[in-house]
Image (cartoon, rainbow, N blue to C red; front, side, top):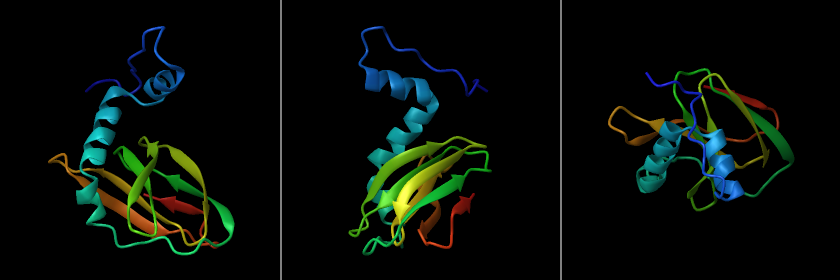
Length: 131
């Protein structure tokens, strides 16, 4: 099994944004995200939550206790998913959001197809989602 902490370092002339992306996400994770993004229609067909009129501003913490890489997507009022963050196994991510905003945590299945692990709507009384 490859070391999950190994990253491919960009050439010195690589733009800063690319360097940050490469430093923060290892190559297998980047490939997984690419697979999910190219198959967003498959992911969108599974979404049952939708953002409604925004409520109060809040922060929501996602905790990944699984052994899988998870990908966080915001779901707009038209049920379109937009990528926001990667959660490596054993990590947390705190996201600024508003009550009534819809979110999806997704991963790739054994056939490299995206599927939803958890979908939820932010609520003022919920500050943490654990998977």
